[in-house]
Length: 227
Ligand SMILES: O=C(CO)[C@H](O)[C@H](O)COP(=O)(O)O
Image (cartoon, rainbow, N blue to C red; front, side):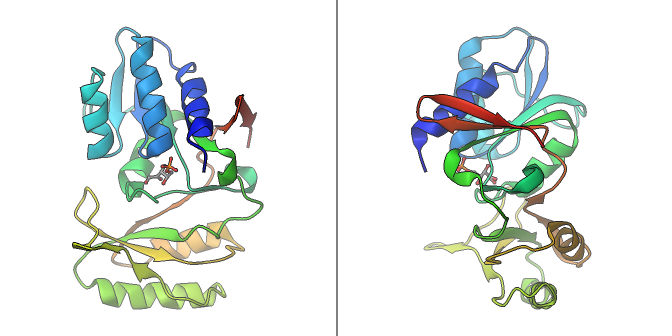
């Protein structure tokens, strides 16, 4: 994990933004570099839709004009980080527990750019535990159903609820996160569909066919990957 690489990726992505755009702001340490670089450009008439309260606070502090999906349902460009970038720019996201709002914003965007440090690029998805957002009511029952789906995908270990010292982690929407240590996701599309079909699962961190470009920071600049 390199902060310089994250910074270089974030700053490169800020150059893709034009005056007057509606911009989706991702969540996480890499996305924060983008938000800072975007604010520094001081472009006129931008409206920014944040994907978390954390990002909203940062953007507000930096003087960016905030909007919501309700007021600006069509987003021109979203820039966000990822936990893993696999073949075809299939992603695992949600390490920062913002996957639901992130996916809502990504799906409303004409173009999505993923920004990351080089360590995020992997030959196959699954080393990073897959985040799954679950409603709190009956979450242990939902976790059992998730375990059945994982077993059907030859993924042995059940998902674990995400918690901190002060208790279970809640998302901005008040839900819980389960992390599934998959090791290898052989069929991301089938796993995505199987998880999404479970009552109680709100969303999962597989972002498939959503990324138009990945900008990967290097120590002295950046490279790009197309799908
Ligand atoms: O999906 C995310 C938040 O839900 C983040 O984009 C992802 O966790 C990457 O974070 P970072 O840029 O801090 O490495």
